[in-house]
Image (cartoon, rainbow, N blue to C red; front, side):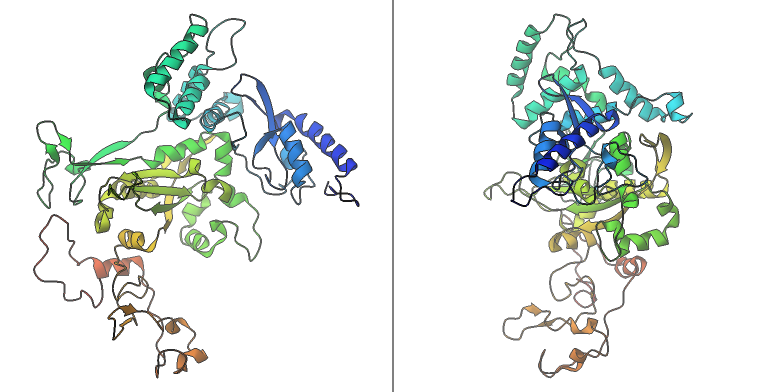
Length: 529
């Protein structure tokens, strides 16, 4: 298996013969072969590629797998072909159960997503052993099954379904930026070539309507133009801001809001991941993968994850509960400095998935789109309120989810473990200003920073010695650091979240459209920024 090159430096003929034997064996096992219909209407059969590059992650056809094995050889420690039909009591090597679509495939990601869900809707009382999908999941599977009808009836009907055709055309429109007029004209020509009673959508509008049951919910929430508040829940009916008294609308007559943000609830999107047999299995990869002592291949191997599990054993007991990370930053969508506009998307990363999937754009959830044209600044928490409310609900009560891989319903809970951002965005998310002498969010008011005599700038030189062990010789070194200065004090105490809240709860909030208080907080610049 691993003697790819002979003594003369050429491809070993015996190795080539064994590759053919491997391919014959793998393609004879129907349970590991993915049969699909490509864009040309032809049936294609793929298996996971076990080469050193693909690592049993990507699905490839026979010719591509053969070329990869000739070029890269087999992945390490794959003596038992567990992903290709050979029986084993344990998994060997890293593998993913999710099909990945590369640029050289004839299929497209949108269609594969729908087909993934279609393959999980073959539920009966015998296969589920009495555990039927919850009503919401059952409606979704029934909708997919109903939409999976042929484009026309008859002996010569294509294997392409109405659902596949609609998703393929919308993907084509998106990838090549096709106008609606061109899209409709193309559909009219194709409809003219098909039998009279075909079910292909006639227009772009009809295509979107046919896929409407697949859509996920979203909310448009009006926002105060000064970022003071959002018109949400109990404030939904207000027409003026509670703080700055600015009107909610540009024109009261037409009720056109000054500012609108978009919120995509995360609960329904996480449910969809468990509705596919493939992604449902990968959602427990953090628990199932093999760990090596002293190495960290996933955040679940780290101390923060393990500490959370030890503090919340009820949450950790259900391995399908979801751990999330939040990331946000502003950017100019116009790609032009002459048009200043700052748009702030808020992304959620699903850390249950294996590393090669959790960072892919198809698995990163966009939960919020904060509108511009200026940065939300310290009032970013105003925009995050719907997300925080939903996260509290998902952590406390949870939601009922159908697991298509294990064929059972369970209560899924969610926790936000980390935020990932640059330092300015960190200041906005945490509420601690990262400017001035008190910029360090760890030291806070107990900082050793000082101002330079000549330039007046803040310097944090020699602030790190306080974190060394008390017996470290650097602590009493008066020549190698600041002149004639030793460091005999310990690091600042680690504060809990409740202690930080107690310190900052009495600090007044200043909104952009509100007149600031005449007198500053006496602790400003001394204990906080």
